[in-house]
Image (tube, rainbow, N blue to C red; front, side, top):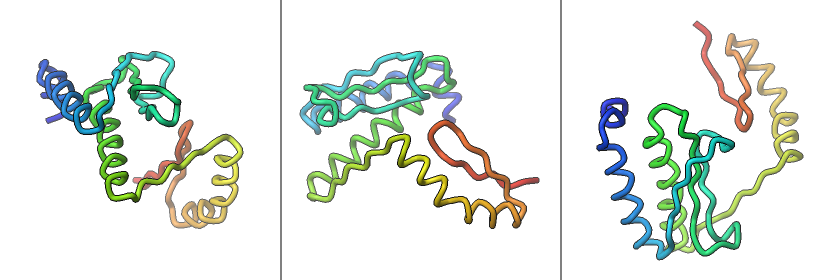
Length: 132
């Protein structure tokens, strides 16, 4: 379905409508920017960057970018809902925390490998894939 939507302009229309709705809800502009240096898609919350508007960056070379953009917009919607309930939390990571995460995870990785589950790392997350 995602592929069919993205083959037409319908995906862009849906994204733009949702962006406009969300801007009214959060009372801040959301700028959507093509960024070849970015990861697939990344949301920069205005407050975290001391900006007046939110910025969503996406790599245009990825397939179905509308899906990625919508995914990032939903992060903002969830954060806004959490703020309304006074339940929003900010999680920040850096290289040192990432290294500690993987170091702490080593015993779990060894166990999973023994159970025939292969571990694969991407730049930012650990992803598990079941072996055939």
